[in-house]
Amino acid sequence: MASPSGTSSGSSMIQNSGSEEDLQALMDQRKRKRMLSNRESARRSRMRKQKHLDDLAALVAQLRNENHQMLTSVNLTTQKYLAVEAENSVLRAQVGELSHRLESLNEIIEFLNATNGVFGPAGPPVPASFYEPDYGFFNNPLNMAYLNQPIMASADHMLQY
Image: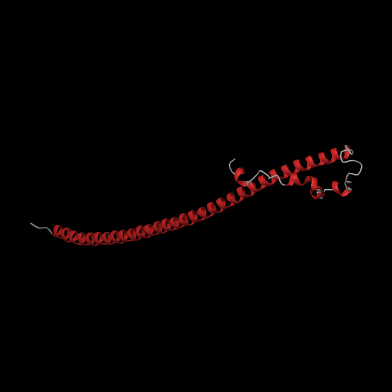
């Protein structure tokens, strides 16, 4: 048989289960809201990550382009340097050859001046300007044979080393 207290506890269980359902519905709603928020946050995170990767890829392309330009510039500069170095080597060789010729010509002049009797007393006088650094000795017809000798240095030979 039913007691009045039993009925009241039954009706309170019905009320409790109603509030439990409301509580469960509220928790489910919060859970769904949190899941949506997490999904949106993850989507934004993926977008940031993708943007970062795109930025890095663009930076890599830019740096590769700059590297290629620098490498091209270095190669051109190296080629110009080698050309100038070869030209300098040729000029140094020519300076050596001309210095040697000058020494030889000066020795000949000294010999001719020392042995004044080779051409006789009426030998051609050597002007004082002949010894000046303007290299006037090239005007002497006795020395022209030395000027016709080829200079053996060239850029082609220098690049082999």
